[in-house]
Amino acid sequence: MTRARSTIRPEIVAHYTRIARERSRFKSTRGQLEFERSKELLRRFLPPGRVVIYDVGGGPGTYAFWLTHLGYEVHLVDPVGLHVRQARERARREPRSAPVEIRTGDARKLHFPDVSADVVLLMGPLYHLPQERDRRTALAEALRVLKPGGLLISVGVTRFTSMLDGSWAGYLSDPAFHRIVRRDLRTGEHRNPKGVPAYWTTAFFARPSELAREIRAAGFRLKGTWAVEGFVWWVPGLGRKWRDRVFRRRLLELLRATEREPTLIGLGPHIMCVAIKPSGGRKIGTVRSLPRAAEICSAGRSGPGVEGVIRPV
Image 1: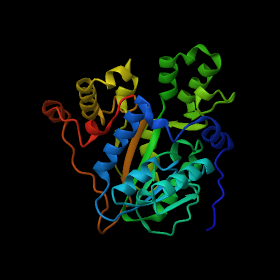
Image 2: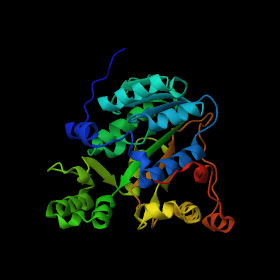
Image 3: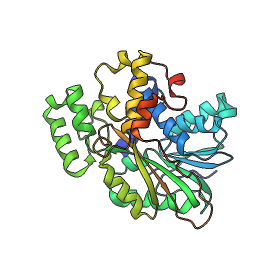
Image 4: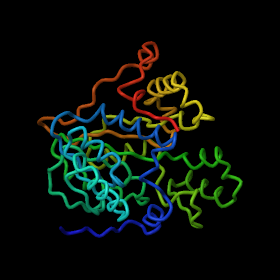
């Protein structure tokens, strides 16, 4: 098997190899919120059946193994060698839920043939490509490999994340971080020149409208943008409140009621965009009409499956 050489920026590879613990990141309370909300949104949009999914930039396979367990045919690609090795190790331990393919690769130059996927997930690449031309290339590759009517699900990090996180965690007391935030707000290009682990790594922080515009410009038909964690990410004492099942249910209910509210959608760190490759034929992954906020609140619904699977820490 030919291995694609990663051309991702070296500081990003170093961060995920030496500092970040991507494999265990979803065990924290905030990590559980991100993971379960992302799964909830994916369950809404993904079509049933033997659908081919390319999980591009899928890390050590957290979503890929879950999706394979649900019955999808998943191909996992990531530019970080450590993530690929971790995914392969897990595949040996859990062969029944392992993706059909795990390999090194770059979102800007996929090895997949044209018109071969029903769904492409870009749940990391678009915010680790700080240059717009690279994001355009990644989106063009997703368009190329998708079948007509195929579904693109992409995730971005919002423009105000470092400002809010720096205020919440106290990083703004460091003049260097203050400079980072000012640049983020001005350009969206996040840099960590001193390599402070808590200040993350090279990334692009987008306004929701910017990410939507780039997806449309690539030739996709945008179905919508959803907040992943929304306001819940910043709730004080979230760990303790998450353990209160009633309080947690109410938080998630209100999050769903405001997940598409334009004035709040950029508040949490992650947003999810859903788009379709235009086609005159069958459409894959049509987004169902969603209940209005008032209907969700009055019904007190907690959504599909979330309450039963989140385990607070």
